[in-house]
Image: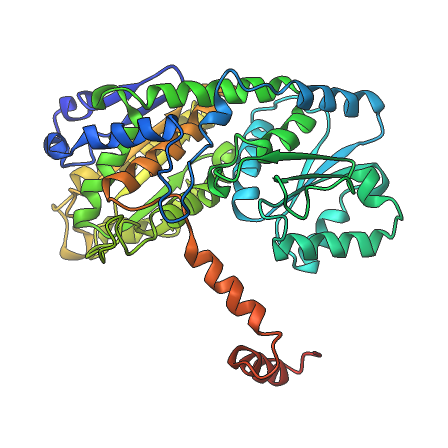
Length: 453
């Protein structure tokens, strides 16, 4: 059996998050990693240097969490909206990083019964069925829409807004009921809307939850104090990420993954419980857009991908879907268990399930027949959010962002660009060009399906 010290000796604890990594293996190799380089790059980021080399810009989402940043106007605007009593709901429109983090935070707060001033809805796809299903839940004349697009020209957002405005047909819809969140100078940065909030171009979409991308909708829904508490928690997370390895959860998590990826090309992300059920979308985007690169910072082709093949699901449902493969599959797939502090009886039982799964993966069982043999030695870790609070969520968001950022630095890649996302957009646009190969393929499929042009 595993000595309890294997587990006890590998716990990092802060006020808001605990990280248990005794079953991750390879911990004896941690001193082989050049941590000084990671800390140097992080320092450069915090000081505003242009570390995003492919786009020649600074990375500025950390600066938004600085205590010197003034959010008084946002607070006054939120208070004005609440005092006017004109609106009974908020609808957040965004895609990818303009949506996933905000929804994760909102869903967690609702699960923890955080009081709301206005219910918050989300539209994240231009599929008319999706849009209409949300619109069916709200009263259009009393709903405030927050349109989030960094570029101001995200095609999905444009089509969502066009569908809503055409369905509603209110002559002053944009000016009376729409707020935009974008960068300065974008097509959404105009006086055509009730209000607009802009953020710096150095804030990447997947790192934007603590910018106006998240603060506007969350503040309107839960009140202005949430923006203060959320940023306060994120700021603490950023400060803790400057610490040495044995006190730095984000850095330890990055180092764990750095070594795991040398042996295992996949990763399973398994948050447990209702509060964290929207987490996989956020983590998937952070990991895949940041680490899904094949060229290093010195323009060399990588021999191994910094990004894992991802499996994810919400526990305990995940136990009854893909855990058979986790326990007995040919390929070893490390598992990251993530949970929030249990408060009720069934939630405590869920914690027992997590620990049971971790021990089963680590110990295995070779006493049965060949079909019932488990090799064990399969890595896992456990991250627990210890406070069911806005501050705790802010801390956790910063932890996720910094951990992925550190992984990118360890692999010597740029984790802040996403040129692969843009290629698909360009090809899609060419479908409308008569004679292009994309247009010809579309016509073949459309005619086969008998879909009107």
